[in-house]
Image (cartoon, rainbow over all chains, first blue to last red; front, side):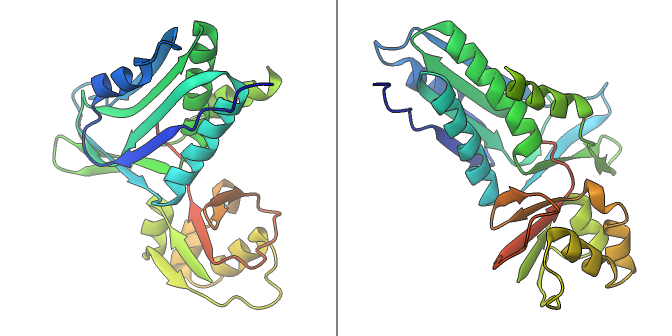
Length: 157
Length: 83
């Protein structure tokens, strides 16, 4: 009988993400052979950008990421799965999102982390808007077709 | 039903949320978008290309062909750009 899927930890927060603490929490058991993490950062867009503003849909953002993370935990034999996503103003160089997947073997952890990011990009209700160095508010960041294609590939695997 | 709007949909409509009572013939998500679009120039501007609008009912993504049913909260927003 397959072991019960791990219950993922999902947090939506305004403050900084303590990545070292997340990795320590994911790796603290003798059952773990590898932890794969992805952290996404705010670019400065060639020096133009003062900050990114992340709007989210409170309530649905947590639930949608929990649904995606539960799918990952069903599909791969994970021992831990943490997903943290910020909202509000994020400065260039600061982290926006952290995904960490732990497993007995590396392949499951790599694939689950990649799956989580691809789905989070196209399904988690967050929207980015640029705040520019010249004091103006720029436009809403447009979604990319390549993100949809990246999520779709998991249906074919 | 309660409607909530995000990002440029919210900005163009000029409201973050509102409560509406659509007529009985508004049964699907597509019907709702069409009905809303006719409510004024701000709605028309937000929903000018209804096919790009994403919709969630009670915190779950739905397709435009899906029925509204007994939805309590319907959210309208642009394609997502998190991560």
